[in-house]
Length: 105
Image 1 (cartoon, rainbow, N blue to C red):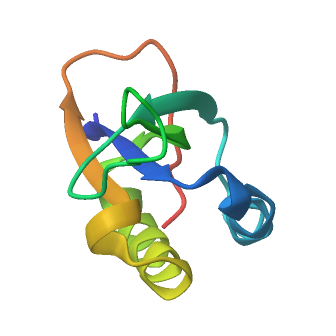
Image 2 (cartoon, rainbow, N blue to C red):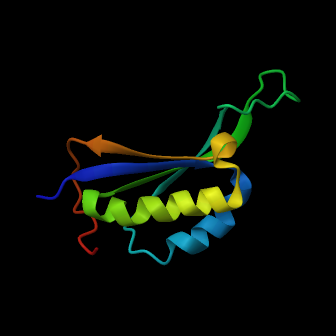
C-alpha cells in the first residue's frame, strides 16, 4: 500500500480562481477548501484582532503524487504573493485513510 499524506496550502482568498484553474490540470480525486482567519509574520493592523482572511486547501494524496503537486503549489503561491507573509504549503503524514488515492504519477 502506498503512503498517504495531506497537502495543505493557505493563501489569500483572491487567488482561488487562478489556483482552481491550475488544480484542474491534475487528476485530484477530491479536495477541501476552508475559509480561515489568522496571521503569520503579517498582521492586519487595520483590524482589532489583527487577523487576515484566507483559504485553506487540503488534498489527500500519495507521497509520490505530493512530490509533483507541492512544487506546483509553492511556485503558484510564490508567484502570486509574498509567500513569507501571505502563503504556506505543508505536507502532513496520514496514518490511515479509507479511500484509494491517486495512483497516477
